[in-house]
Image (cartoon, rainbow, N blue to C red; front, side, top):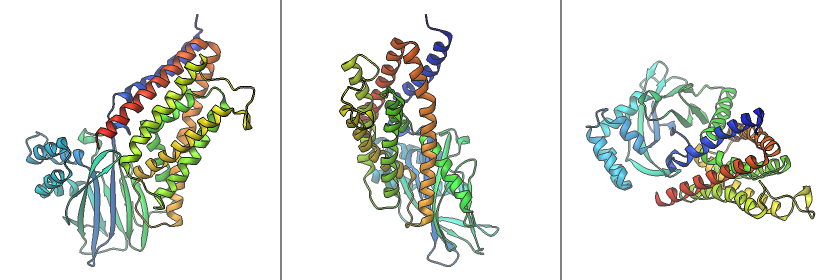
Length: 405
């Protein structure tokens, strides 16, 4: 009979399995939760007092948000039709045909202020369609005219607010080169405003929270981590696996975010999904081979007490960690010249990611260990069910991201 504490452990693991199961029902676009990211750039304009603004907005979210709530707005009809057919040229034409509607929506929710004046926003240039993490984005240019320029500019973004009912939260990743300052900032509903006079401490604090929230809302990265936990029988194994993953994704994250290396999202996102399935299936293979939650180390263990299969697993985790790092950089979307301030922001973002990663390991791994020790059979089935759910989610996302290209 399962003791009371074992029931508590099972209840906690049931919550984890429930979250994983719910993730398998989501599409590729929802792999990072019901949130959205806006990528914004502002720079000194070509004319005195003008600010050049470029926004990257989720195409389908922009269409439904800017269109009439009764769904009879022509933008909604033409825009959703273009989205369903997936033709980038048609999507761009749909937005350009309703420039006034798009401008009105954006101007009410994205403002540039100079002194006490809100700079007048106008459309500038053609609309382009790009893809981020398998999701079509509209790249739209604007010109902000400030008739009485001050010493500092203030940007406020409330685009795609949760009161609109489409997403839970929206992050705006702002890149700026204005007022003799350059860098990046992160805005959200709790902190929607940025000033070019913002302190470094405030900026770093925002990037720490952004890193933590990115992992918390990134179901694909969390499932990869859960697959590592499920396939580790000893604390040493999960620590080494998490370390290999951390080192690998930190390297490529910083290199990609600073523009040293690059890779198309159309390649990175399917590989990330496939990595989840492979790591989950690795544990299932161990179950089939040994009949235990993870294969025991053999008597010919190598350095650090890890056998050949263990070192192969670490190598695979390291390689996939390199790919996940490119995914982190793509999601951050920073586009600015290299600087020590930029490097500091990236490191703080990465620390935020690692804090959440450590918290998940500290929460889930002890539960699995206790369950394996107290109720071995149930522990075997629990980790097996976790691995199956993770593998299924990864495969689902892999095919969706491949077919969605």
